Length: 237
Image (cartoon, rainbow, N blue to C red; front, top):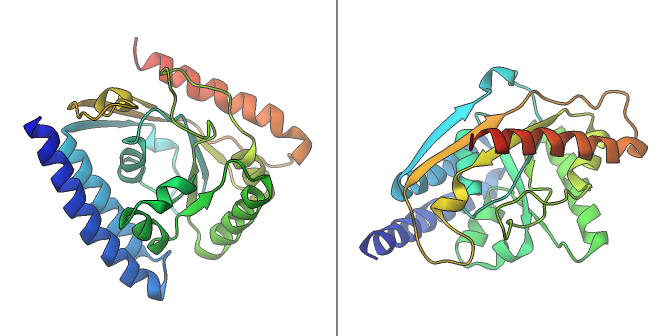
């Protein structure tokens, strides 16, 4: 209980300071290296406070200066700081709109140019994807999306939605599949507790979309989900 209280206090202070810093930086350019650094600092402090021991595999697949559409399984609230800090590429996230309604935290997300998506509104979802295309082209960033749409209730990987894969095809950027394991134990969904432990990020080989059209999106979804599921299963062997 003491650990949880201390963790929540650190998260609150960390989020407040970084959010207001990001909002100031966002006045000039929300997609700047400065704001990218702020988000990584925010994430790093949370991982330290939670007692996360992070292992990252597959960085050799990343090419310096390249942008990607990053897709990952989604197990816990801890996935966001884990991936922001663990992936050595400048990231912005497509996240559910509910997160943007959280005072201070939501303001910070807007300040650094995170993108909100309304899962119940298809028109708004497509507008978010179009904005993501513009950001990728203008600022040379990578976009992270959780194609399951929400955190897994049972720890299994569920059916992927097509939005991020359409984004990859439209931009011509390679998909970067990522498997995350261990975050569910750190912060279980629906429970107010924090459990220190190991988290593993496995970066897989990028999937090229060269020559693909929107009619190929289902094949792309299937291929990426297979890769991510395999990496997730192997982490527990």
